[in-house]
Length: 332
Image (cartoon, rainbow, N blue to C red; front, side, top):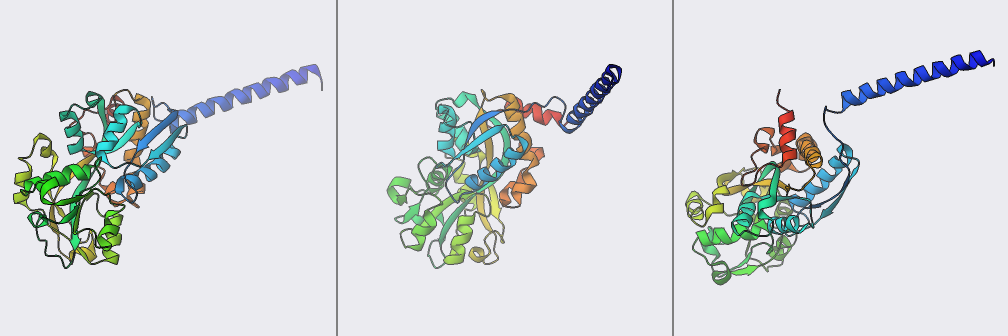
């Protein structure tokens, strides 16, 4: 090959390479939203008890994040629930978590460590309070629990917080007038099957698989929490303003409800982080939470209720800057 021909070949190869780089750059620009950075690193996500909605949601969200944020590794960590989740954020044991709005407000009210640094990424779905008893039980209201063995959730759970308040609203002192059993949704159904519980409280998305499975093994029903109880509940304290009257649809647990809807109360769940979290990371996670709603909702029904129109309302905590950046990017 002559020197002149070699120089022509090299020049042609350089031109082709340059063209390919331009094309690749255009493709990257087209495929990746303008201004979006790809974060990297490792985060810990504190979820909930095994068989609970938090735990299952965490697993599916981790899978979605693995596709959207491939340079971010995620560790899931089971927990007792909302109260423990918030403590883990403040201590640095977790970077993201899910907690109910009432638990967040109580954490702030008690001025627990790091309360002023809590930030929201998205309002997710609502938890519904479910008071479960055997179908043949004489229990017709919360007041009928007096003197009985009642599952009230674990100490670090949002269930414990709301169970204590519901009991108090019915005129029952939780540690005196009932025999409280500290247990989570992973063990309460089994305790009821073995005759060691007369009733148990659960607060979670609909349907919760553990309650659904119990209804298939044991005749159970849900005790209504009516408007009168709701009015009394709002007198318990400031953070009870996050409870609203709600109805468990008749088809949520078909075997337990006999075609009837059940009055209850609901409270919103919030995806929570700290104000020190990397804005690019928070923006990316928020994008995946909203974008994966339908995929995750196919397996965790409550996730279908994540709504872009309400996701920004993370009261009682402000939006993290990274989440705010994502929501602003959606405006025309």
